[in-house]
Image (cartoon, rainbow, N blue to C red; front, side):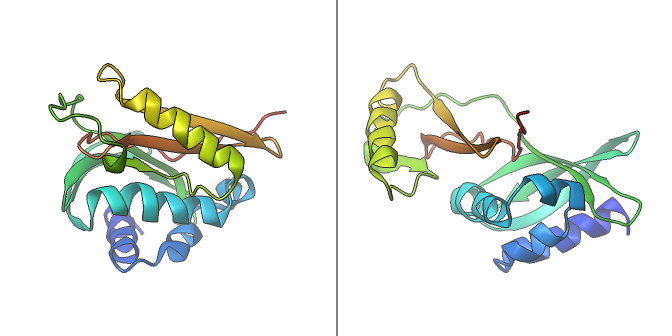
Length: 175
């Protein structure tokens, strides 16, 4: 399988909400450190909810084993860098913003702030309240909060819905 075929497969799963299948495309080393739910939530809540379906993609360049594509979504675009293992699994998946930040002209309304926080515990509700206060300041664009549990850093993200930058899916393991 080549990178173009992998992107086609990933886009098909993504557009049909088959996020568990996207997880299966990753190499075993990745799966040892990142839970299936983390990947599924990233694609469902962080990408699809913000950007909609993948419309098209365009090859940009290849450097060593890494291929870069411009991925066009219904509501925006991101750069995607991927690398494949010898057995055609994803060794690298890196979603990055394509453009610099755009100035937001509207007032920060708490109802327009996107979040991956599900508000299920008192701590999550408290973090949400503090984050909304922070994001209502026009000088603040986004907030990324990491919670360390079982030596794995899980990312959470909040931003005004007009802000087109989405964070990269990643993980960090602490010794």
